[in-house]
Length: 220
Image (cartoon, rainbow, N blue to C red):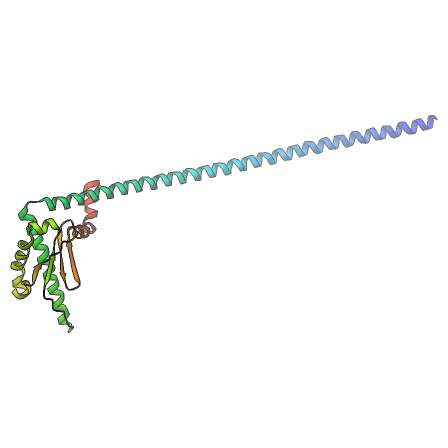
């Protein structure tokens, strides 16, 4: 029996030793794993922090860019609105100017349109092409200008142009029975062709040429 007890004790002792070794190895593995995962966690945390910082910086850059674009668009819209108001005021001032000056402007517009038509017709003849003869050159005003100026502008344009285009052609100018839907200026109609000399068209063309200079004056 004593021999059996010794064998049992030896087995138990070996088992305890083996268990101790296994436990120490497990604890060592746990410490190693903990150290490794801690290092991994630190790396992941640093990676997340770096990525978050980069995304934050990119977000700030995008926000600044969007803010700058919004500011630029607001300024451009404000400048455009001010230029619109400038030309609208110019149109109103032209229409409200005294009788003589506005009438002179209408005479000049009509004369230029008629001379331009005659010049284009002459070029067509020089190229050997046929031209269409027109019996009349109708002049259209808005209702107010037709009542105020009408025949007076027609007569003024005849006197200005008859030496250049001939009295016969100048005599074809007629005041139209129609009124044009324009703020000011006039329209010259011959056949199916219309030359738009309204103030809106003239100021639009002037704006293309002068907008840069006007911007410098307004926003220097």
